Structures are given as C-alpha cells and as structure tokens.
Image (cartoon, rainbow, N blue to C red):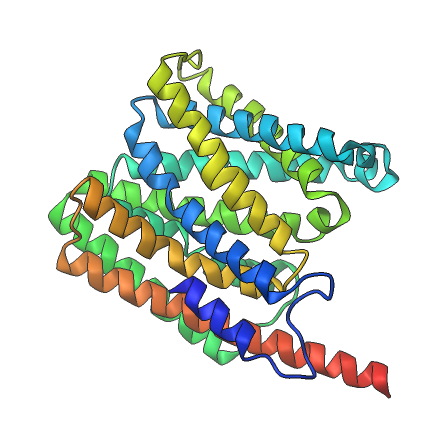
Length: 329
C-alpha cells in the first residue's frame, strides 16, 4: 500500500516540479522504496524466530549493523568525514540519536513478545503521527486541520485496537500495545533528531556511528537485567546477522539514503506498507490471524496516518512552489 502510494505520487509529478533529486531517477528511487519496505517488513518475523531476550537481539542487530555499514564506509573512503568540523561539533546529537534508536528498538522488540505482530507493527509505525505532533511543539511546524483530523482518527483506531486487546488477550497484550506506542514516540524523536544531521554526513558514517552508539546503550540496559549477551548459537547468530542485513542495512540505511534524494514525506509514506507486509507474513508463518477489533483498529490507524502524510505532502509542495516562485521573481 505504502509503496504503491509513493510510486503513484512519483509518476504523477508535474513537469515543472520534480520530487526526485536531479542526480537520481525514478528507475533508481522506486526500486529502492520497494526494497526498503519489503526488508523492514521482515524485522518482526525474524525477531519472533529468535529465542534470545529482546534486548539481546537489539544489541546484536545494532552491533552487526554498525560493522556492516562501517565495512561499506571503509571501502568507499567515507570516514574522512569524521575529521570534519561539523561532525566534531555535533557529536552530542549523534549520541542522543543513537540512544533514542536503542530505546525505540528495545520497546518495540519487547512489545512483539506481548501482543500480535499486526498490533505491534501498526502502532510502532504510527511514528509519523508523533513526528507531526513533536514537530509542531518543538520545531514550530504548524499542522493544518486535515492533519489534526488524521491524528484524531489514528488515535481512535489505537484506542479501539488496545481496547480489543484488553478485552481479548488481557493486560499483557495491552502492555505490548503501550510499548509499541512508546517505540513510535522514540522513532519520531529519532527522525526529528536526524533530519539535519544525516544530510551533513555520508550515510555510511552516520549509520555506523548511530548503530554503534545504540549497541553500547543497549549493552548498558542489559547489564542491570543480568542478561547474557554472549550468544554464539549458530541459529541465533544467523538471525542476528539477517536482522542486521535485511531490515537494518537494506531497510533503515536505504531509507536514510533516500532522505537525501526525495522529500521526507515520500519516505515516510512508505511505512504504510510495513504493517500490511508484516501482518501477512505473521499470518502465513505464525498463523497469527488478527481478530475483528484488531483489523478494524489496524485499518483506522493506517487511514489516519495516510491523511496526515497526504496533508504534509501537500503543505511541503505548496511551500516549495512558493520558494521557487520567489527565486524566479
């Protein structure tokens, strides 16, 4: 759904306004969008295949992700950027963003063990809602009525879904829903924090630093819980590496690259595809068939998110058009 929405929007662009950076093309961007959505959709399934504690999975996913991105960066010679004044002056932002990513993963991974994949993924992917709210509060990016209507609709869907979980699966599932929402808030903070920083550094360097800080943070979280992070069981190691390659390197890192090529709302729209893909995979592999209330809440939340994203897209296009006209004058 998300990928189709993005592809349609890219194809329907006008002759005077291109959504795509001149150094790229639709033939490059569209396959990357589809790739990122499909790869990120696999994360929840891989997590449930693991027998390790969710925090241990987060540690190895981010550590392996840092190693893989660092390897690519070394080959490309990107790490010269670490000597730049911008990087040295903004190291505290990188630390904060890395910690936030760790908290996002920890809350979401834990939620997957407590509620269904459909509920957990659609709630954690409600991050555009929180991004819009936080941008209004801290960045002064006022939302229009349609965005607020979409936020209200999504929140109604979340309440309906959570109420269904409380009545059906009990307090544990409700706790999982709340953790997924917390994960969405942390993800929104992660995107807001990295909006400016990521564009000033090579993607390989940015993601390597962020993933490494997230791994260190997660290790610090594991210690007070007495969790053993030394896991060398072949099946578990294979799952950790798969999580690092598919949803991390080919998912999150590709999304970070796309942010340098197309407007943020185009990449954000793609998240609408993840809950659908993850729910279908969970139904096929784990036979997690969502109940009626979950399905209704699922659809309502996606509709609310879509309303916000469409309104943000229209606002950004209008803003860009105004800037272009001012430059032309």
